[in-house]
Image: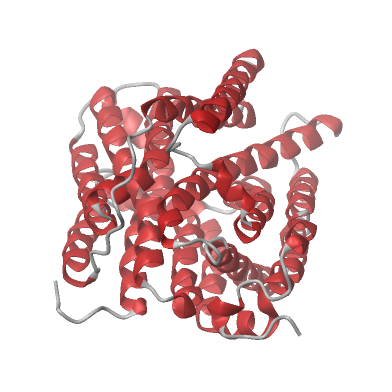
Length: 467
């Protein structure tokens, strides 16, 4: 590693590239599943296990990431996570049976579970608070760009090359990431944590897995309703048992006492409501464009990419906007504007001019990216260094759940609208009702942000939002 400390921008870019690899991989595979099923000689419906096995691995290991970072060092764990994810990608690309692919996907998930929160922790421990807004702005881009370009990229790869390239494209990115982390990222350590909370890991894994898979199967109709309800019930029961356990444990794996910090609590509660709406966008928009408008996957991908373009435009203006407006006003009014733009997607029709659709998606991508930057930054404004690892574990776990619940909410709204309209398949009007529903849910994030103090986060921007 260099003797000279890296700039916050360099550190942020390294972490953002690693997270982009993880976010892209999570969506690009979906397009290739039918082709992979043919290669393995199995029914396409059975390929869903390639997605669920990865999600299960994430659900189990995300809560342990904070303890691992404290025990072995955030830089070491982040670098190891990239290596594990890359090795898992190599093995996925070499798979010749479904069982081999599932095992490799689980290994990928272990790496991904460490990359998400530990990558954020690397920034929190190495970037000065005054530059945290700018650094966090980079971390919003992978979560917005990956799900948008993943499906069309997967379609291009499967159409013109081999499905194995879906995983092989991660290899050079992963190798570059390992080199860059070793070369540029500082090894800032905290005192070793207490004893590992093994029981907490088991209970949190059952909670997150039960809720995620219960909501996922219910939202997509992948299992009978009683099975989905049983999974959700198991998750809720495990959550109750974990709550009882955490009150007695000296070092709980997920520390809910952090919710006593107002800025962290507002970011979690308001951010969860906001992500419910945003989480449904990558699911609803391509479906409406392809099934409702009759566009091809590539055409649909080019349209939805405008959201990503808006996210990229946001990066240089995040700090000045937050400095001028403050976190409270930004989170409140920007949530309302974002909700309106999400609802506006439901007004799209095939007769709309392309420029009008592009404009709505471009501005929508901008405001959503700004909102994520504000949430991801204000959450850590009033936490001390010793609380950072526990905070990233809890924040990432809740974030993963809220995005899954968003897909479920979007799918449920779409199916209910079609059912009430007496249609077997959703029509364009049903997509409109689904967008209006998730837009309304996102709008609830605005009043939830009102609990912030007027000068909350002023130290992060150097502004005077209290005025």
